[in-house]
Image (cartoon, rainbow, N blue to C red):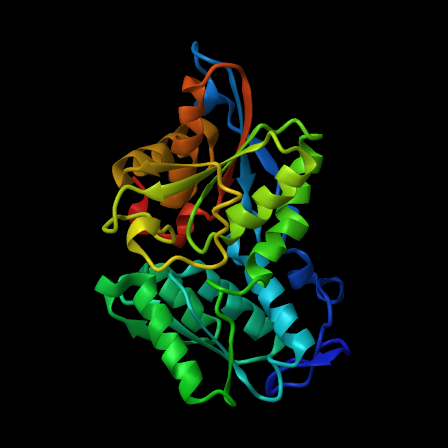
Length: 318
């Protein structure tokens, strides 16, 4: 038997669920993550760099994807697309799947996820533990293949599924425009000069960057990608060889830097030992990208998005 929820909207097979994050303590804890100074990492005799990490691993399921997943669920409920017994269906490399599964368990709707076979075991275990049905797709096809498989499933049974489609759902960047960007701007009192973030769906960098540029057009937005299609930076895309998500706004991103997996893993070790922060490889890649700003003339105040905790992928830790 499922636990009762506060009165509100009806979703899935359960009954009432909270209509807004304010009605549920777990859902309400999404966002408002701290900015952490990375002083040891940034210390240099070269060009000054004030470096901050946006601690997105402090979200309830452990990653930045809680923001987009919640926005997508709320938009689905508001439109009526999610409800009436329909199952939330999407593709994920891991973190968004965990976020969907958490929300489904908490709010009472079923979740079905298409995930590449080589996704980390930890994330697969967590998705299943939270009650999601997980369908594994070909590892060599990555998240692009998982998306194609999920789309075929949704098209075959449109009455059964709400296809969340995180790679093309405007609620994804919208979540970051409404929350991540304002948080960073407020916490630094508008002093930010550079936003540095990994590119996966593109939602984080596009939504956050758009908000920051509206406040100050001189803010530079730097996207971080792997150096090629075969890499160990789970959650990130090498856009030249991948299906480009419509949630990625190339007009917002001023430049792209590409980071080797080995460099990102070395930075993961440095962050743990010098800053006391245990994060995943995509966080390491973002910090590597931010440190390249030291080569530029003038001082910078940079924020690197730290998408998830190292516990989400323990095999990647040193």
